[in-house]
Image 1: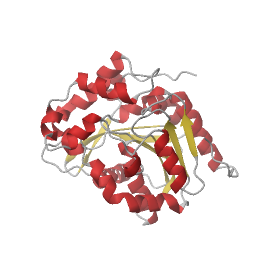
Image 2: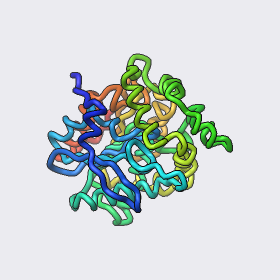
Image 3: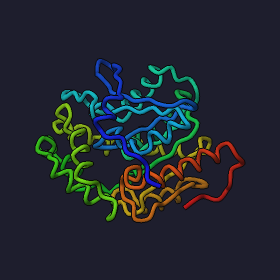
Length: 300
């Protein structure tokens, strides 16, 4: 089953804005029903969800934003970016939209870390989460394998590397992390790059990359929250992703009680664009199971 794309030019026209701590944030919402918060990854933006947007909006109230420093949202230069602040942003967006019901979360990559923070806050009674599904992301710092560009951005020369980052550099990085048969087209690469380049994005990439050491600082708190088991969790993961593929799922199964995991063969780091129909199938199966008697066996 092929899912229809939403061209970036159309996606941008559907966006709205609100102000978070003095910065303009672009966000999107559609559909009715239980709120479903979609949280994108690094270095892209919420357009990553465009294949899933309409199918999910047929069942849920879907909500997504370009986080601070990403996509078409503000990208202040003199700012210290933090995963904790991005979690604050997600909560501010929910408040802006008057969302009072328990929230379901579907996250990817960098967004997984934001979702982990929200999960920890759930157990601190600071937000009410109904469920959380993670796509490929560094849930455990010990399994995260950054690509060369990420390592360079973390180095003392990161500010120079970021400013010199180009579409060609993005193509080289994406070639490494997508599945062999599911790499983005030239048109898709233009759109991914356009979102990164928007608002002079390359000049702050070395600041955004601070999420990698921040994950190490928060590891115990976040892993402990995942181990609580009161909020239903699932991992849907592209198996051949060199950053957070099968090796991350193996660690997840070791650490998380009764792990619910789905591995997608031959799919890389961006399953929501590489295999959106599969992601949709496994996500809806997970949600359907929440309203029927749970099965003990995990999917894999």
